[in-house]
Image 1: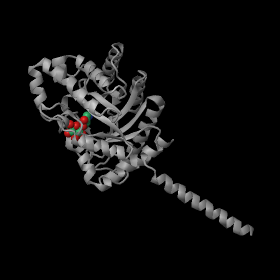
Image 2: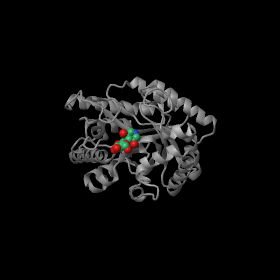
Image 3: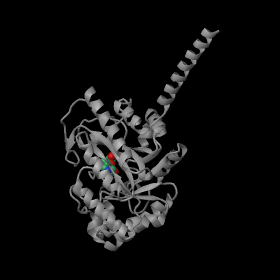
Image 4: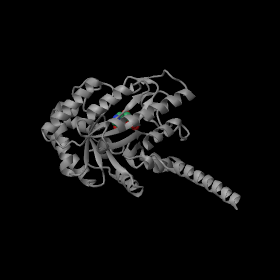
Length: 356
Ligand code: 9MR
């Protein structure tokens, strides 16, 4: 009798272990995280690829359009808006209980040529266009888009000066103030972000950003958060990332890691500007990348107070589709999933850090 009882106990323990192991394995990134985990995606590609879609649904509870919500997509010409893909993506997000993040209202690289041509010639027209565009767009998706990158990359690539773009040249830095105010009027409950790159490594640029935020706040401009794109490289020191995130968190604003990926090779921040130092991905490199992903989550949790953690969003999630290869014309392996859409060590390290 006693022996049977022992066997039964061993059997049950075994079963429970197997079941809980399966349960943990079946949980996606979003299920183990205390803040939203998102990804940028090209919606047409997602629709056409069942495997990609499955991974996306299992792991993410926030979605950003990689390009479909940019001005050149939404307003390709003066006569019409193109809402079709945005509507489709929002319906998909709602079906799958995902937060929609709007990227991006005002961005120099997202501005279509027809706006640049007209805007350069006519200040008043550009001023009115900015207002109308934001009211139409943010108003249409009121309550459906949780947050917006209102202004993207308004600072120069290096240092802390305002970027000299159509918007800045014609309207001055006021375009930033106006964009935030219009977006807030159009949807008072949407979270409004300023988003930029290299602010996690370039402390001069970070200082420019923090000065701008201070000015915006002193003028009661409704900014709710700072987006760190966080396109990083293996050799960007964790200490520097920790310092810059901490400084940004001290503003009290939400902090979004909005376009995360971690590359091995270098580039000069311009199209086709990749420098191919590594031709192959070794097992050692995979492990090192896993550690870097783990540290990033740990730093975010450590220095950004819980109520300011808007979430972590990846910019594409597979080494097959990453923008890095297309844009910089190099080979690289920046994502959690490999070229065959299988998980890499980085996936498990990232997940472990979310769980802890
Ligand atoms: O990944 C995007 C790429 O497919 C587009 O061609 C490009 C221009 O619209 O934009 C890329 O996304 C950028 C994002 O919108 C802003 N931060 C930098 C991203 C990578 O270039």
